[in-house]
Length: 137
Image (cartoon, rainbow, N blue to C red; front, side, top):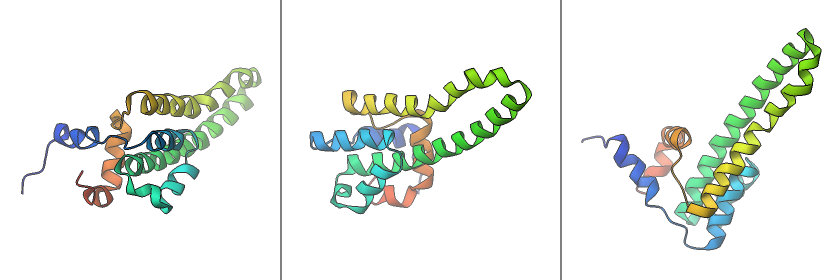
């Protein structure tokens, strides 16, 4: 059996469209409230919507990556601030990076119903291959 190329896999996500405005809102909130909203989608009847389901999986991946980033950045900030204390006045801005990125992705979901994102979709596809195969993606 031939394996589809990356362009064909990306088209699988791109064909998903929200069936209601509620789908679009829930999908967008999953990137701002990283773990809570995706779990609510996956554990309730909201998972019946392919659009919301894929965004919930991507929201879990985004949330996990954000937590890892915040842990590593905290260690880096602590070490650098111990060496040069005035850096603490500037380095706190980096803690807002996951929130800013989540707001941007949520904006793209609400305004353009975007589903595929460069790195996020690839990681989600590799981690949740079986779940996405059930959707025909």
